[in-house]
Amino acid sequence: MRIHLAAGLAACVALSAAPAVRAARAPGPITHEVRMWSDGATAHFAPAEVVIHPGDAVRFVNTGGGPHNVSFDPEKLPADVRRALLADMGTQIQPLWGPLLTETGRDYTIRFSGVKPGRYEFFCMPHMAMGMRGVLVVR
Ligand SMILES: [Cu+2]
Image 1 (cartoon, rainbow, N blue to C red):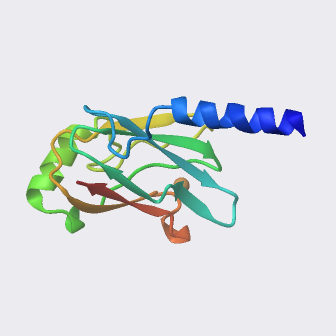
Image 2: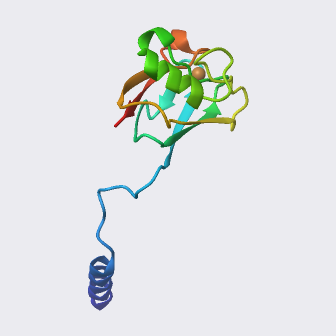
Image 3: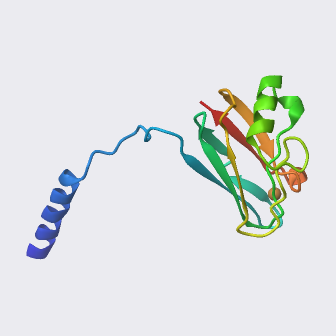
């Protein structure tokens, strides 16, 4: 009993000494991570919705069942967003289609420096038929 009480007291002290949890994120751009995987029957971006601020980067990682890629449909984007994405995406196998990540562990990072706030859908070209898609939300 004495041991439990001591442990409880220690936990209380630890809690009160801990810094307050901040809801706001640290200032400056950050890198988000999105896993890309398939089990053969289903294929996913996880998380399927990624919320970023302008200047943030998203690192897409193939965690299995590739090849995967990140593709945007040019016809679903306003012209200024299309231009910004073309510049931000770096390596592309065709305009707005990121490279195929064939091996597990491979990644592709996009820093969204010029994309204005909005909601933009993307998909995995090899798994388009399996509905592998996600949404980028720029705040
Ligand atoms: Cu895929």
